[in-house]
Image (cartoon, rainbow over all chains, first blue to last red; front, side, top):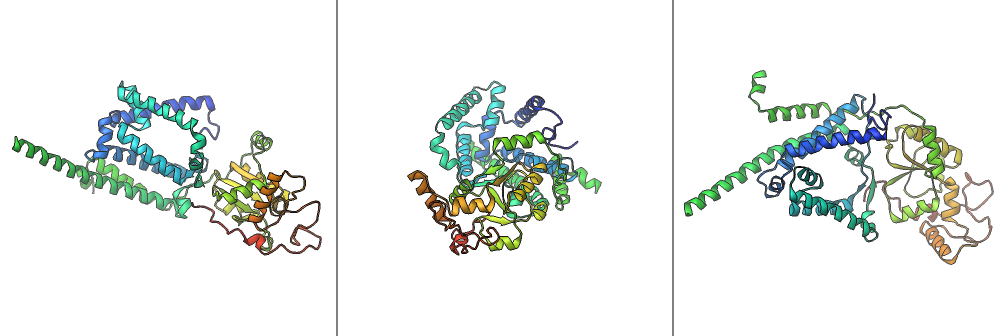
Length: 207
Length: 213
């Protein structure tokens, strides 16, 4: 059996909806278990006192990357059939910044807003509604945005392909980046906790 | 060794596992399946939709816009490719070398050849192997020469004519009127003794990098 299962015809389009639903439940469960159903937890990322978002997301990236690498290495996954979102460098940088701003202001990203709504958080619901309103506004304003939207098309490219690097070497480099990132995140968290401690001690002393 | 592992936290053990898997993966290359499955229905659908062709004028627009989300493959042998005319941004990959050319099955691949049969063969080979975005440049090199470099502007509206002239000038060609046989084709494309194309025809537009921004 060769993956991607849908593209090799292991199941049809209807079944793929069921699979997507199950995967979505799993994703939402993982987000909630990581504490990402709470805007407080998410926003602490930007105050640098809790880097769980960074650590969870990077762990997910490394886990998925190693899984995909080994599965395709063993011939169980045809990586060439896996859909890649085409790269449009300039609009994606602008979009990333916009998403980041929305993340800081609203305390959620799209996925976590839905997870928060599911657990009955009102702010998550509001964020989700804003998300859909923004989507509609974008669609209506599309003719205005189109020049930026279509700028700098680079096709469906990947880091190994773009920089002509061996695939496995990039995998190894990303693992190293993650491990370095985790160590760095731990260090930052300790620093911030110490700072907070000092500040609260000072306040008690003043009182 | 075991003692040392016991002293590690779960997180540290997982990190060590990731590191080991990362090191082992260094020589990994994602395996292409190598299998070719032909879906007659899918191919027919692609053909009926017209997604298997690209008009040379459309390609000219893409080149002028500086789009880099496609790969233009010139299937002629090296000598014919060197003799020109060449389409800017084209890479010379003969059919025999397509397998090892490092094409990605999901990128937009445009094929251009001296004759339609060769381009169709390459289209079939690639599409059967799961390359999803393959298209043939309509008319091949001759189509490029006749529709873009030296377009016949007879009977065109003024606007269309101005456009065709601008595009042709961009690539160093010139528009022509009537059925004049003034298309300077190289001997490889035309048996008639016609003057060679002006040197600017193939050099006017700088060869752009395949990828990048």
